Structures are given as C-alpha cells and as structure tokens.
Image (cartoon, rainbow, N blue to C red; front, side):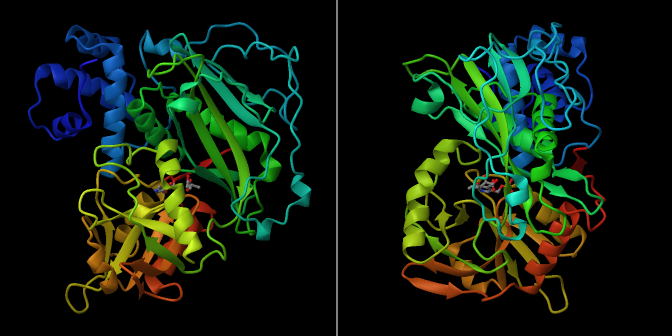
Length: 480
Ligand code: PLP
Ligand code: COI
C-alpha cells in the first residue's frame, strides 16, 4: 500500500502541497470521517479513478480521524447517520436479509434495538446455540456510592465480527468469555485497540452516553494504525447503546456519583503465525458500573516521573492500543510501590517535556500573564500523547465557560513548580487534582487539596455529564 502518511495528511488538510490526486482522496476521507454528508458515488469514483484503492482510502480515514483528534478540531455535529460508504466498503453495512435466529433477550428487550443493517447472528457455538450466562453480580446487591474502578460483570455484551472484508453479526450476547484461536494476532502481536466511555443516569432517570462519536473517531484512528478495519460509526454507537440498554439496571442512580463504564474492544483473531494483520476481527463492547479510578474520589493524587518511556517517538502513543499499556505496567507498579498513585511520563527524546500520566492526560494552571488577566491552562502537545476526550471537553469549558487562556504546547518538567494547580483528565480519572509530582529524587508539592479552577472545571464537566447543567454542546447522547 502506498497511501499517505499521517504527516502528509496533516499537511494536506492545511492546504500544503496538495495535488489533485491527494485532494480527491482527502475529500472522500474527510466526508467519511465526519460521517455527516453522504459520500456520492461520483466522489468515490473520482478518488478511485485518481488511482487510490479502498484500502488506501480506509487508511487515510484513520489519519484524518487522528488529525481531528490531535488538533482538537471538532467535526461538524449533526445527527449521526449510518456510515455512508459505497461498495465494496459498504458491504460492511449492507443488510443481507435473513432473519436472525429467534432467541431470548435481556430483560424488557422484546426485540427493540435489534441490530439493524447488519446481517444475522453468528453460527451457533459449541453448545449448539446459546452459551450459558457467566455468573454476574446482581444490581440490587451493589453499594453504588462505594464502587471502585473494578470489573463488576453485567449480564449482556454486544459483539460483531469482521470477516471476508465485511462486518457481520452484531448482537447482544451473554457469554463473557471470548473463544478465539491460539494463533490470534491480538494475542501474539498485540493487534488490538480499545476504548473507554461512560454512561450517566440523569436526574430524569434516563441513561446518557458522553461523547460516544469521539470515541468512535479515536477507535477509527487506532484501528487504522494497526491495519485493522474500524467498526463504522453506526455499529460502534449501536454496540454502546445496546450494551447500556441491555444492562440498564447497572447504570448507577443519578445521585450516587458512580457511572457505567463501557469498554469497546477490537481484536485480531483467526489462525495465524507470521507477522501480518489478521483476516478476522472481533468487535465487542462490555460494561461495568464504576466509581472513582483513584482511591478517595476528588482528592489530590501523587504522580511519579518515570525513566521508562511509555511509547516511542514515532510509535503508537497517540492511539489507544493495548501494547502501550502493557509497556507501562512496570512504571505504574514502580510508582505505586514508591507510595505514589500513578506514573508520569516525559517525552521519549529528551526526557524533558511532560507527556501524560499512565491513565490520563495532564494540565497545569498558570497565573495570569498580567495582573487582572485570565489564568492560563496549559497542557502538553506531543505526537505521542493519547488525545483525551475528557481533556478536549475541559479545554472547551476552560475557554468558553471560565474565560481561561488555553495553551497547548511543549511543557517542560521544570515548569511544574510554577503551576498553581495541576490536574489529570480521563474517562476513568474524570478530573483528578495532582497534588505532588516526584522528579529527580524530590517531591514538588503543588496543592494538598482541590484548587479553585480544578474544582470549577470538575463541577462543570460532571454537571454536564450527569445532566445537572445544560448540555449546550450536545455532548450527552440519550440511550433510552
Ligand atoms: N491517556 C491515557 C494513556 C489513557 O489511558 C486515557 C484514558 O482513556 C486518557 C489519556 C484519557 O482519554 P479519555 O479522556 O478519552 O478517556
Ligand atoms: C479510560 O479512562 O477510559 C482508560 O481507558 C484508562 C484505563 C487505564 C482505565
């Protein structure tokens, strides 16, 4: 494949050195990523007649998605529609008819929210059909206010499969285990990526997902980086919504402070030995009710700068792929053993600039440039940081609601002592104040509680997520 590199895509999207051939490709890719306007057959034909293959197009879709992410350029928000791709890519979504085998559903399901546009279910498993449910916790037994970030198994998950170049299946399943080949590329070569998003019960009693299309966009970019077919937006959203709806009793009560965490997962499966991409993929979403990621909730945490690199300079840091996390387990463990909550990474070239924490992005609050001016929120810019949807939301709120000056740039570790406040952002971490940073043998204490700006950002973000504040930007998507 001789498509475009992520850098070429970035340059081209900014209008640099774009020839007609590249423009034809980008035009279609951008439309596909935004999934807002249907791609016309003639547009696709133009890209193809310029010599681009569908595989190259898919790859560039991933790069465009990454560019949108890393540069925090919002795409136009309209009602999500089915992923509009012409054949052969469209075979992924084309209904093939054939009634789905009649089977029971989750409580109160009655066929509502049945997969649409995707062909019938998987062939029966070894038991001749339905595999018995694994032991799950009963929702009534949960102490919502005291949940941690641990896996509480719920009865239903959603699964689809990509094989023969098309998405197939797409149904709720009870079996919490995956039955995959021992030669699966996800097991040997870490050909897998995942996402994390949350559903919140609003005061009206209804469950809402927070910015799920952004998670889809990031999965599109991660999967393209690892040569995997991304689930189209329609499938991704359907999987998340169906998972929430099927496990509705596990969405914690509105006032509990807890939420339902949804984990979408895309893995290469099938028999394989050599180093190559899989020919079959499983996309699954499962969920768990969760409380705070860091013990104690909104309480300042201590980060420890590690000598370990999370990722390489031109590696996979900007993608949510499992390999990044396996490589970071040791840094997190070392931080915890030394009495800290999480590792903090520096850039892999000079070990001088802040990257991110093991499970979240970071930001600092700097005093105003001039007396009476706005405080500044600074967050590291680097090609090897995972673009956080929570941070993206925080930057918007900081700028538009609090009137802060927002800076995205390289941030030296030497700037940390000048931070008035510091925080980390993530779906699991929400906004967690950072009280202490350990570096080069000493602790820098920033705060021992929650700083006023961090508190305001936390209240704004969680107020919107939990339906207590107006959702002016359409970030909350109702599930019911
Ligand atoms: N960075 C890393 C390494 C993460 O694992 C996460 C969590 O997803 C984030 C940042 C935050 O991203 P988001 O806010 O989209 O959850
Ligand atoms: C998330 O915040 O969604 C993550 O995936 C982080 C993970 C370490 C729990």
